[in-house]
Image (cartoon, rainbow, N blue to C red; front, top):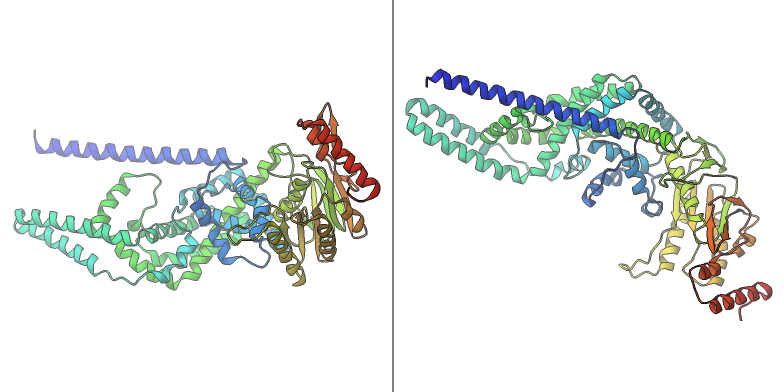
Length: 558
């Protein structure tokens, strides 16, 4: 077979591989576009590992402000689940900045309204929103550490020169040159040079692998910044200008980044070839050392790029969530902010309940909630609290209308014994309440939620201490919602708090709840009735009812 036949076969194979690579990339992009389209306007179903969530939280933990939602409140309200439901982002910068936005609430209404303009635009221009999200999806996620954490870890990278890498390149050049002088020697030297280069490449790269991945991500961010600004979405004009400026300023420090990583989705033929080029020439390791030095000098610009891109994708996630609320629950609203602590919530519902019961409330005083077990008190507290957070972060409430004063949302609800620190439930509870009082004394405006005040102690001291703590929270800068089983509190505090309650109905030996909020204190109890419904002995129930009636008549226990 003549040599040209082998050449033609080789060319045919290369063409076939190129076509396969192009088709694979095209199909990968099509799958990505379909995934984005299918996720738009739906609750996120993504599952998270513990390490992923720690990465997502890192940015917030490092930059959190005075109005942020503290850990107790965040956990009380199940806000991780709310975030997961809303998080329709596709990139690390997007989800990390979105988490921070949701948790670091803003009292600046102008900032909230600026966000709202962008979100509304994306909601009404779905095609442009999809194009925007495709850019972030191509950027992807960093699975190792937060990109923000990486930028601020640069000082810990030991300064490394490129002598070893240059030696590998020189060895390869000598080997190739000797091939033309003495081919048999050249072949041996070339094999030795390649083996030496590959071995030293993986040895050197292993030391900086985590940083390496993050540098690839920063290069992807630069590419994303250019693509976002080139989309020229009118509502993002301010962000487009900033991204274009940051891209222009930083790109010159990352010249030749295509040799570092070309950022293709999937393993294209070009990327496979470049992998071998990198292993043999160490070009990416040489560039890595140079980029470390440059990024240290331009850390501020890198931070700005990170935040600007992250906020941009966060707007997309909010727009998608609004569409989800509109399609699923039928409505949402934009909050109003007043100068007084008055709360007006009409048809407000819990965003994490599949078929929620909406309720309305309008009050200028604190609220005491009473009612039977499982009647809806805790859920209502969480409903108002979550909407207080959503109002001041994503400017979106799950209600027909929602008006509040800008305030830090704090709670003391789902507490547990702290076995690690050997603290009882009562100690944990009073510490939790004290942090709210301390915040109030510091002059902060607060919206606080307390479930079963001081449940960890005896009745007499609970009522005495609870009444004084709640009375102290009756402050012009504090709007307090508290749930209690102690009807006595509704009488002691009736001049300071408005009373509301939930009720139940016993029907056909079953207990039914409508989860509707009513004005006034609760007038029914169901604890003893529940004993009967689940089958306790009749004599236990009758004696319990007798004791309760006697106490009601004479005011003391026998």
